[in-house]
Image (cartoon, rainbow, N blue to C red; front, side, top):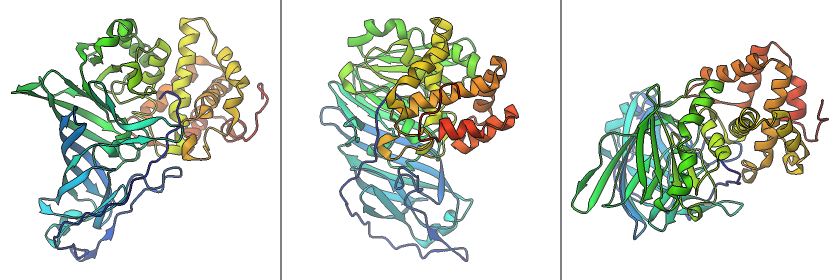
Length: 469
């Protein structure tokens, strides 16, 4: 992600109750309990939900760009991780028209961005721990734009010819209900109908050619590999949509607004080169598709590492492309367990930029380190301990995070071993979730070194250590 400070946004409380019998709480003789409303993330405690794990989202959307409205159906397949009497979904703004669990009507209680679903005794067995159950939510309305602490915007962003949905950290709940936390990753199918002449671009690959009926065209995008909800995207508008295949079979899909196509062409054409270069440094590319979405400059204020094809607000430079593509390994495949662990995403992606400059522009990573070291903004707080949600994407997470990686490289003192360390990290946790503690333990185990002083000074220290310390 490019520099910005996301924050969890609230919504006005709204109550919607569908009059059906409530579940008694008994699940085959075992009393079910409500799933938690929030996973108690240290920075965003109300995001996400407990008691279940989503395995697949099937989202069917009909979008009206002129009115900036949508009608949607979310079919959510999940596995219960406890005996449930009820469970929650995150949804901001949109109106819930109906909901079912295992085909039975569900009562929906709404408080702010939290939906609590409760069904009747006939589906109790499907809500037992370890069982898989299917929830269908039908909803409609005008998706919201959320404003972050630094006045940047996420969620549903209107554009001149359509819209773009960006989700870090909370924005995905503005256009579909779900378990909106990085710790719950799932496969996705997104079927989107838009006016003829417009294109709907999302993650993954097209499951078939677009289908036009009358004045509407439907696109079906399939994402097979697990994806955190904040990485899901949908861009609707006029795009030059191109598909090709890299050596090795990875599908490349680029979608570029015609107004910036000429200015973007040179960098966008380097997507396969950048992916191949990063694969040589970080290990095999972890997804079946790659590419880019490039909108006009004023449609959003930042780039974002949306899975498979990063989003860019205007023609990107190569350095930014390197950064967002590095996230496909660090952030998208290897995803933080909590938002406090964001430095694992941004520090490694920033270091990828330093490595690119080192190899392509003869700028040693040490020079990039020295420049970052002298930047006062990088010392506002420790990268592994952002003080608030407003700081989760502040400078120390990027610059000082990258300095931590460089200090590890110096401690290893062997580039072959260092790059094996990066590849091993991406491979060992491919499509998983990790914490800072997981990373420090991994580095020490693989190097055989006690690096507690490095962690204390550079990762958690409140003051600036000596540059050669």
